[in-house]
Amino acid sequence: MTPSLFGYCFYYHTNVHFKYHRPSSSYAYDADVNNCSISSNNNCPSALAAGVGISNQPMIPTLIPITAFVLGTWQVQRLDWKTKLIAKFEDRLVKPPLPLPPRIDPSVIPEFDYRRIVATGKFRHDQEMLIGPRMNEGEEGYIVITPLERNTDDGKSTSTVLINRGWISKKLKDQKDRPLGVPTGEVVVEGLLREPIKKNYFTPENRPDKGEFYFPDVEQMAELAGSQPVLIEETMVPDLIESYERTSKGIPIGRPAQVNLRNNHLQYIFTWYGLSVSTAIMLWMVVRKRPNEALRRIRQSKNM
Image (cartoon, rainbow, N blue to C red; front, top):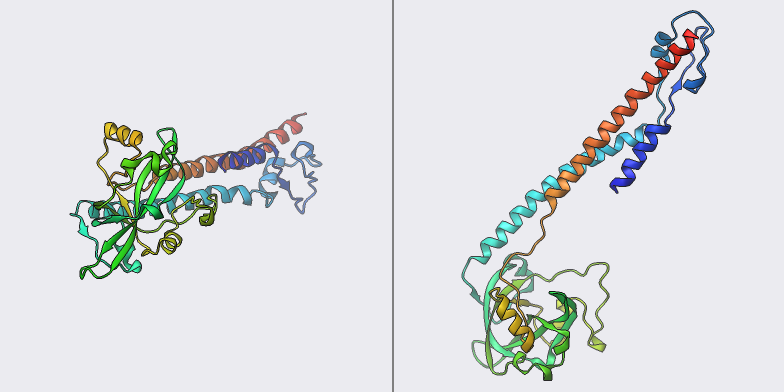
């Protein structure tokens, strides 16, 4: 966007023409300054100063610095909002993990987004879903989503939630090639309760009939697994050596317990305000330069 704005201002700077209106006296002006003729002995510059009019063309480049300034101010507001949001999530991270209740109301999940939780149950590896491909350290792989089946407090029924266990290598996609990555028996999972993410425009639709998933559609996956529409992202302490070991054994690499929201609004602020200042200066140079050139040429033609 920025190069085209500068390009337009440069075009306007080099090609704009000013309209000179004919006064009621005996002056004769051509629309082009280069052909300005004087038919009387009066002072042409003074009449020019009184009769010069600028066309409507400068209105468009005038909007460029104004629009850029408005967008820069909007980014200031966005920066304040994003900073407070990250601070709120980080405050939740430092709290001790909560035991996950048997039943969760999906409508309250946004209030507990990034809240650490702990859950106990058995993985349903027969209902495992792989999301991908996903890259990790330059290697192609998949994100493992496995339902976790839990007993209720009375022990007479079960409830299931979805666990994002982390990344595995594409080479170990088949469960038979990674026996250590499919634990049996009761497990304890510690992770982050996450609000479902929205699919972006460029991500293709999931094809569950072919076992192909490209993004974690929590509602869709929960329906397939007979689970509650709740997603837990399993966490681990970042450790390079352990990550290498997990990769070789096919054990999913969980995410660190960190807030991973991007906050690029500060650089957007500098970009938009910088564009506003630079285009305002260019516009001022255009408006100031052309009348001065016109006056100079008229003086030259008068002295000839």
